[in-house]
Length: 448
Image 1 (cartoon, rainbow, N blue to C red):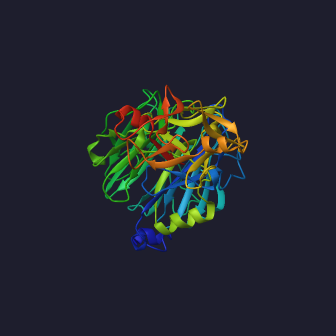
Image 2 (cartoon, rainbow, N blue to C red):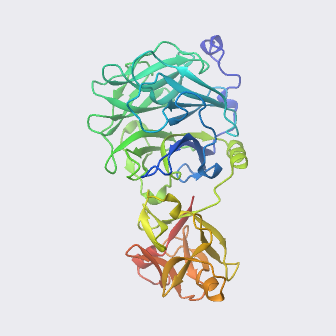
Image 3 (tube, rainbow, N blue to C red):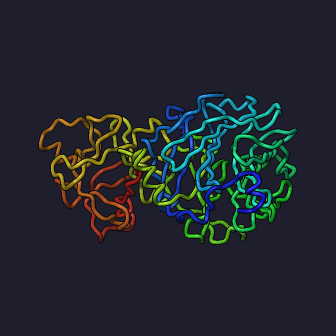
């Protein structure tokens, strides 16, 4: 521990003494296109690979603010120097972005099984907002910097310093490149501070860096990045392996795709490669979140405390932005997100005709199952006849196009597999010798 750190009472357990991170945690809030899935409490998901996520607590909030606006946006999670976590969040319940608010929500967590010590901290006295906090350890100061978006005549990043996330220094401008910015995320890697942000003038995401992390010390070093129609809320994540990075970007609106991602082996090089959506699955309905590395013990404790989802989703192999859903009782694949979002949630239960197989029970219509009829898939109520049970039973096999994914063979037509055609689901004769397109149409990822 440095003398500066000791002077401000930081860190009882040095980070180096803790177990190595082997998994990841993602904190977020939720929204859907018609806002039926909007929830402005703290949501938590976990992942073992940093790319595919399982929402905890059935994607319900694990804690909700009890002061201020009684809601949050833009939660951020930081591993502190003592090994525990702090969560910061915008004090905003909903989408009324015109209101002024000088406060942030704050919680503490030892191991992600509880979120305690709830409080709000006042960051400034300006007639403006306090949005999208990020935080980092500044070893030279022996304090943490809390950076957030505010308007000080223009949209800039402000910073306050703290040793305990209870009292903070006076605010000062942290990053003002001469154009309006929003949604900064800061990661310290060795002696380099990386700041990724949205340029409001052109809607692109950029990376800046500094050798000190001091206010006004950053220089932008990347070209502008964007996928889809609009983006915000960049999340910069270093892989637990120590080599490789991911950059996530949240869609600007819940009516667009929810998250996009890039990868790089050299964050300092500034070149990013777009990730195929086959390679990642963000948490259901997640918006503007934050990712941190966690240990195996923390992963297991969080899963035990909050529970993994009781449902699955099926992602298409060759249209990875689309998921199997029912619509007017017809089974099809549609781009996510959509409402009702529950139409894509299934309970994978033992096969109704053979427990060695599987059947797909609808979550929002639990008396109904996917079954084929004239070779087309539809959602029907279980009448408990032998014909229905047979039509609703499938054998899960290695994916015909990708053995790490899954295909589903019909119980009563064993030469036929579940596949999409013109986005509608049916069963057709397929085998390993079928065309590449046919095999991809019949391959799905079972995910959360």
